[in-house]
Length: 503
Ligand SMILES: [Zn+2]
Image (cartoon, rainbow, N blue to C red; front, top):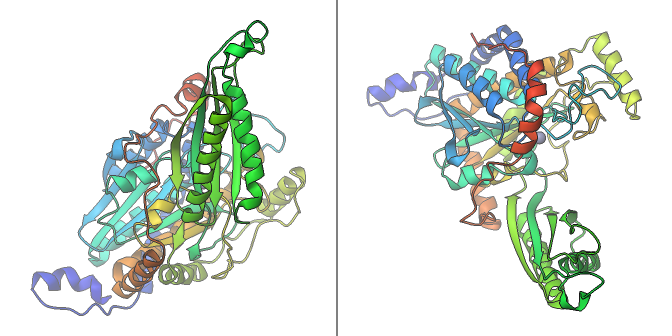
């Protein structure tokens, strides 16, 4: 038995024990893998159920209800509604340290409804949301891995706590800064962030981009556009001038920047001069200080546009996420488990289907990956994830598990074809094994936690974390409510109606 396995007893006896334990033993990991293998079917059922719920951010009511039941019946204490968000799930087993959290999300995307395994575009419910990124696989995987860790802790007397944190509305980068602000991660020693991918990989350093999402609104004065236009102050003009101003700004920005926008209010009809106009902007960069610098330039451009048009302007930061930061010490442990578990064994049918899907989506026909990604083989991505703020609050490890067909772009309906397939199910099993083994390593190896903390402190000294979310910001709970209210009655017909249990 591993030395830390006896810690609970020894600490009861008041003995001072140096924490020099080896990694969670192979025996402990094999035990956890056994728990995961026997739960492969319920895990798949959880993923499939959440696929058909297909709930947009802040509306994950059915998904979190199912997961709450799964986790509670699995021995976890589950809180829904933490940090003021009803669909925020925080589950815990155990007491005291080390406290290791598994962090992920479960929301779907607008207009992603699609018939599983159907290569042609065929929504289950036309216009309805759907899982075209595969977040439906996250909750089942996180729950099964945490459950396997719990069973192993009980079997081997491993002290500490394991947490599952599933935050709402990742697709709009909303919830994690609120969960961080509410102090939920203060007491956590390390996290592992989990996301679906086309490969089995971890990484360290900056994993993706910082992002600031904000609306800029101009208020003017309306008038008849032909009779007395000179009496008006055209808010749409200000909107347009801001757009032009930002276009000229682009030359003066760091080469790493990204800026994108949609006009969310451009007036009503041409003969009514708009007194209200709005654009929703996203500013991104390789790190948050640069993104903030660019954002401040946007604010000045908006002020200039208002001055030119005699309008007034205001902006509201809707969401802001730091780039995800991974710790090398944790990545090395995760990689050890990736190498141990390996890739799923794909069947000929699965490989054939992957080729067909790649062909029909106009992508290179490379099939499914058969080798794990070596450490350092994953460059910084350009997308963003609000988990970034968590990774600047507590040392983080990152894990991508292979459940997407390579080359199939997420946020696109082709990616909604396979999240309930055996490809996804097998990816979940291997991902859950790596995740449970990695959490066990963090629970039993204080040296990894120590190294990760030293690394984290050095990083924070170099780039101190600051909240970009305004202190008075409140989570937008009605986000996506109208869309879900509109489509849910039709979507409900596809619900699987099952309540999977882990055992
Ligand atoms: Zn995602």
